[in-house]
Length: 206
Image 1 (cartoon, helix red, strand yellow):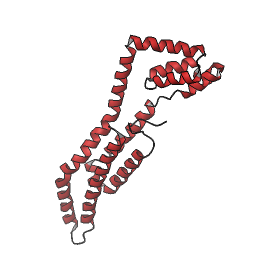
Image 2: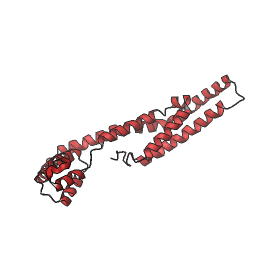
Image 3: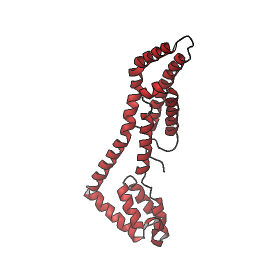
Image 4: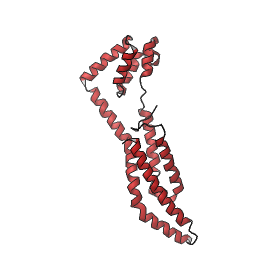
């Protein structure tokens, strides 16, 4: 699921949070209700809107909890497919030898790197073949090594775990107990999504 869709769902959840928070504030600020009366009204709100809020929250929590497992499963499936493809692996080994030779034109090397840009195992092999960022003293090899995109999987994992944790804090029980806390948390989660930490595919931007 892309980031724009998740932001839309987060904004819908924020609307639900603001709605319920307003109802809670209305009861708490009602000077004509006794402490017991307020407690009864709040319990009535809690019972009445549990399922209604769950329709927003449960969907988003499922999305947030599954973002990382789905990405890791897709990456593993893709890597296994490539690793067990004899033709692909033969071509990759030839590419590695070309990079090791140090004789590739920079433009050709960059085109080959772009070809393997989604295969981080291949990119690691190419980086090693080039002598890492110093290029074994070869300026062209160094330029190519620095052109290879960094593996963003660990950063993505960290960010998606943080997002899932933030969504978890928006649960109904917490909202009923501390609506101001939940309002702050949902605003923070939306700001996080709207920032440039993650691209539209929910992968870390390095």
